Image (cartoon, rainbow over all chains, first blue to last red; front, side, top):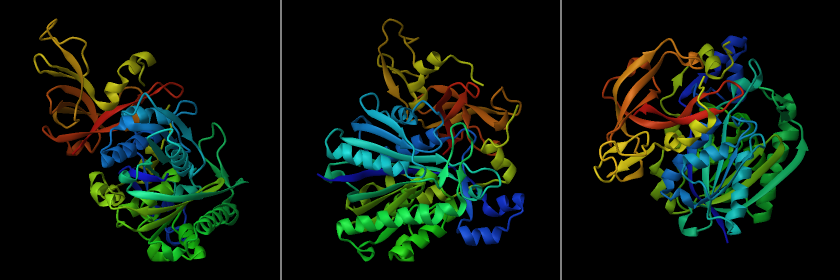
Length: 349
Length: 132
């Protein structure tokens, strides 16, 4: 019994701020930041957008692209580190808004930037064990970065939803296998009630991102007996452009393999949506038979690696919903003051 | 700030999320928000739930510069009467540049935050519109 992606949908708010504008306010060197991070601009939400509205729009795109009856969805899991409520699920809002209620299970996930891929793995188990027909796994965030902190240059807004099923005739991509690598590594956290996360600076690199991503990626390839050259495309969690490029090179993947999925330079880090956005952007242009390798990373820390093979069905459903590149087109650029207003950094009495 | 009680909002929540109104199969009229009785057919009416496509056009609009409590950050914003393609009209915020709004402009629905009951209360979600 195999599991596969039956459909996918993404959503990105239209607003963008350039790295130059943030650097202007804090007196940082924009050119050095842009070349160091390989990020040039990032998305931000409208006044009335949050993780729930982004998750709903992504989920609606996934349902629309598949053309399935949403009543078939037996589970909704939304991964995010910016759920609008501390207690009250985002997933019930999504389930109601895609008309999947009431016969389903739902819960919210949190594992820094990899809560969405943890949701995919949960759905894989549920569909393969026949507990449910279809599962909806979402990664969405309005990412937080404290004013003036390094994270502010990349923390973005966006979300991606994957419909996971077990009927091979419905797959747009077969999930051949998954492999996870998890340790207790405090590289990034946010305490209850605190508005912005804290991080360990460079500690987030080697002991966090690179250790977990490379172990999970190598572990999956060893388990499956595959090599980087067996894949047409690869996607790695993209907190910036530099980390996934370096991880790809450490593992033996080429720049061409990661190119379609590397959306961070014009989008920023959508946290729980980050790796899934890369997978969605790759599915937007992959051909039947193409193989995709993906590894998501979440601080705290863990990595989930996946191996996909794209099926003929991708051509049939791809254009029924907006592609990631279409969602990135026609941005509305704002200055730092407007950005601060949108993000609630300016508090009115 | 929205001061509506939580149960009152929740009762019509599905209608707000997915533009679900009612259709009288006796006279063919469509209603949004949903009605319990067809005002034309009265006892002879036969109402069923109906999901609107969400496609519509701006009948008229105004630009809000002095907002109600809780909406101050969003000014200037557009409040419009949207006529849905099936017939009924509803009041909604239109997302977009106020200078680009036009009567007759085609719109489509989006899922947004409608408001919240302060910092501790419920967050209310539902449908707004954006230009096509």
